[in-house]
Image 1 (cartoon, rainbow, N blue to C red):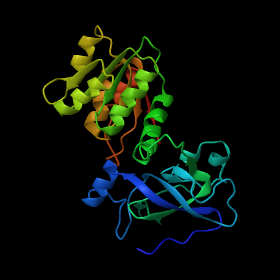
Image 2 (cartoon, helix red, strand yellow; image 1 turned 90 degrees about the vertical axis):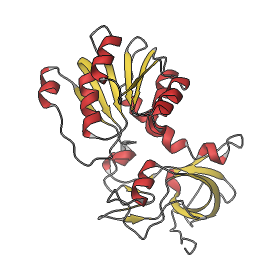
Image 3 (cartoon, rainbow, N blue to C red; image 1 turned 90 degrees about the horizontal axis):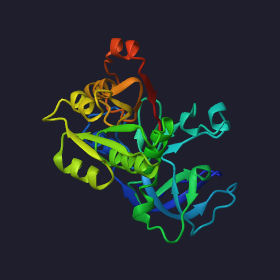
Length: 274
């Protein structure tokens, strides 16, 4: 690939580390329609500023930076209100779909608008800085419904984002954190990272097990970090009456919901677009 040209408001970043997101794997194997080739994928990255556009201020060559995975326009109503993740003209680095194509960071260089850059302290390695985007997804998900210390939280999916969500919950002082997955090794990691209870969905009825753990009540909030209809239904059935489900995973474009259970038990379902 040629070195990307940059616009006046952009910078050229020499990539030093880039994570592999699950969405990149699904793009590589063709199971998603959002990685239409030809495309340079990759959006969890950090590096060094190589060159800056003519109108860029506050950033200079040599600066150590990371950047948002989403390119926001900076001008729409959502951007002006600080809700850049809901930008009307949003584009995600390393994604190509029917609406746009934006090359990402699986390359020596990537061009990004200066407005989505964040400078890094010298003490933070590029490899760890590349995790910033993933951590931000977990932080935003928990911010959508922050449990009180005494409330019980459920995290369905103990992959990278799920484990990060567990760590964010732990950092907020949540004392009961239940992790659910099909993989015993992932559940072991989830417990090491702060889960107080684990449930293997391949051998257990998750809603029934969660009910037993909570005296028949259910958890107060569930974070669904997979994006399948069955796991979302499990989350809905595992929360208490009046509980909240935060949808973080989006692997399946459409899912069926247990509508009657949601309505009669007054379950709130919140999206989380990190």
